[in-house]
Image 1 (spheres, rainbow, N blue to C red):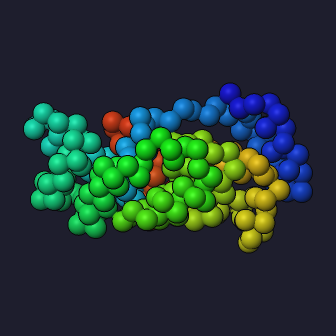
Image 2 (cartoon, rainbow, N blue to C red):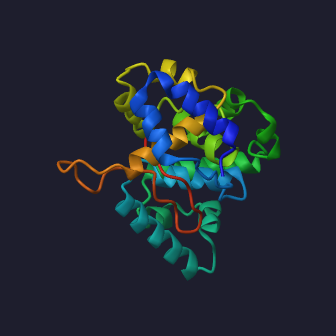
Image 3 (cartoon, rainbow, N blue to C red):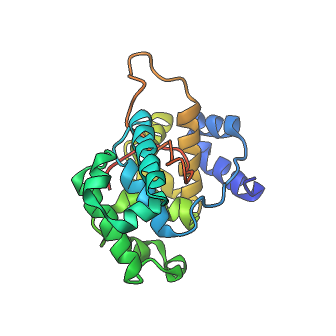
Length: 229
């Protein structure tokens, strides 16, 4: 479970925004799950495939990926490493995403995604990741938060975290609000995703919204709302 001292810090930082503090209290200490991926390339594969897809669409694409991999006696990662563009397109992966997956494989082969990334500050790591085709700041933030467990990243490009914080604080500048939660802004974001996920959905919104909540069946990932890059 979350360190009690970190939870207390978040509650104290939220004193200026009673609705946010109340939501944090309702959520209580959360569990920080270990990374579900053995290496950063696997995390990037999942993020790129799921970019801008709804829960339903992502599940359908991954089902086709798994079926295609099983048919040739490979894993999903094996398909990406093989880089058969026609096969990947047949699974429902767009041409741009196929090229991004191939770029991730090339980056890993070139040694850009090795264990040394873990020791880098997030801005430096992000710059390396964003040099890979199809990987932008949002994806780099997700990798930092969920794969490397950096505690102090505010994902300013994440629709769900930003929208939830604006709703609970009535403040447009979420980066300024989040600054009060340093050095645990990543934990704040995790709470905001949890709060959003457990809130009742507005009746006028469709159920099949774009999301990054559902992971590939072969690699679980945390919840939130999708944004390209």
